[in-house]
Image (cartoon, rainbow, N blue to C red):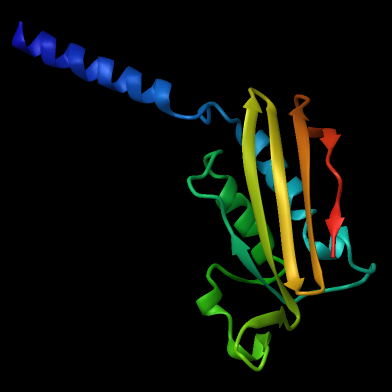
Length: 164
């Protein structure tokens, strides 16, 4: 009887833990990969810079905790194909930062900061908030809602694009 009770309590604890977690389980690999593809299409040279603009490096800020298992790694892998990717401000070489006389960061030289946040709205429906910053006079932000259509993510709502 004692063994049955401990197994029963463990099962209840496991069930309660699963109920308290955000709905991230069950994401198909195709959904994760397609969303990663979509996210990397929102870096600044695709959003608000002149066609042909290229950056050599970036600072990636990932969302923690990760809402969709494997998404951060999928995005990171794609970005590393195009840029040198730094994961913290401290890792960026000083010659790639433009500082004011008082030492505050004014801009990046040939690079940018990129951040995305995913909000799960319902099964197969997510909102992604994008932000980039190249300097005090160059940055953007936008939120886009997507629905999974069986083989790809479709834009169902596009918030305004804010650019400075």
